[in-house]
Image (tube, rainbow, N blue to C red; front, side, top):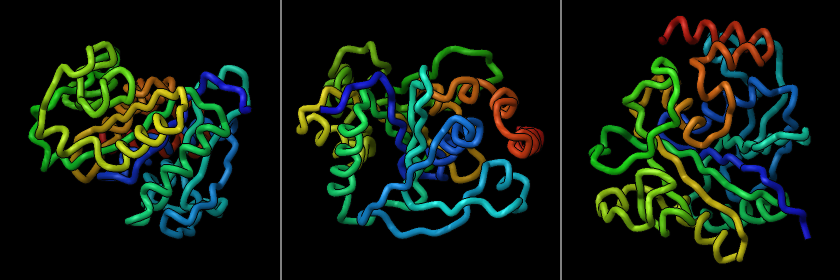
Length: 263
């Protein structure tokens, strides 16, 4: 039997504006020296081949030296003492009709590595969101870190009593019956993860976090996701400068340009 850990597995869904992928990539870029990459073979996501690029390279508008090839689904993990989270990166969406099989493979990996918590990151089309549903405020911090207009929706398989939405983890289950919210989010993939983890008898907390965004520049929303997930450390709290200080020089330069142009 695999020994249980206290670690969290962060899983980005392929969603609006690629905001979940961007949030995870911020962590990967800043912690490249501490994280090991493990490709995950799967028949249930679209094939993909491409060169690994950092956020800094994308922002800089040019490709640096040729990097490693990436696969559709990858796990970035750390064996260091004190590491509190591992991160998946999704470069391709799940093939329609294969959602249940994909989630089954994900749950098997959760069991094999003994994770205690799984956090799913999601993003919704703000143009279709009415804004009346309960939100989970991000943890307090300096006002400049995350704009107050970045709400984070939260769902959990334990504290929120099934498929209900609630204000935060301390809210008693079933506080809200927002039919419109439950019809839009959480989506089928989020529900499948919660259902299959529970069906497997695993003592694993599953949380899902989503930000309503427009397509475009959404760095504040990505950082809001990391803060609400309680992972990412300084990356989640600072507008890029603190995070960049932890990463390679190319990432520092790119993130500095990023902050100067868009903030």
